[in-house]
Amino acid sequence: MKRQLIILIVIILAVTFMNLDASESSGKAGYQFLRTYTGARPSALAGAFVSFSGDIHAIYFNPSGLAELGSQMVSASYLNHVLDFQSGSVMYSRPLRRLGQGAIAINYMNYGEFDETDINGNKVGTFNAGSFVITSSLARLLTDKLL
Image: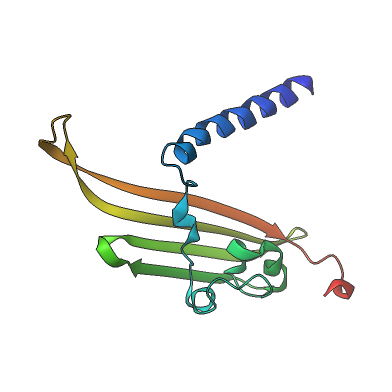
């Protein structure tokens, strides 16, 4: 038990310190691509989707809303942004026997191609940049009286 606790603490500290560099280097919060809304309904509501339940897009806004799905659901989206940015997502949810409603989502953003330069500003090549995240959730209705 002690060994498992120590391993868990080491993993949490490692993940915490790995993320410090990304958020402090530019002076802004990291992972800004997560602010892009996925799906037509949440986008049309400008992200005001916390109170909605029974929709697979609740995995990003309020995962407890998945508990009311009760059946399989799939959603996929792709979007071309300005300046050649591209983003997309795929979501899948299904009932899991005696556990509740499980869901998994994959979200990505491709920032396009950039020029690689040396210290003098001479172009030496190109590179691509992007972001990728996998999200999972499990929701369960405890009783009908909590609706």
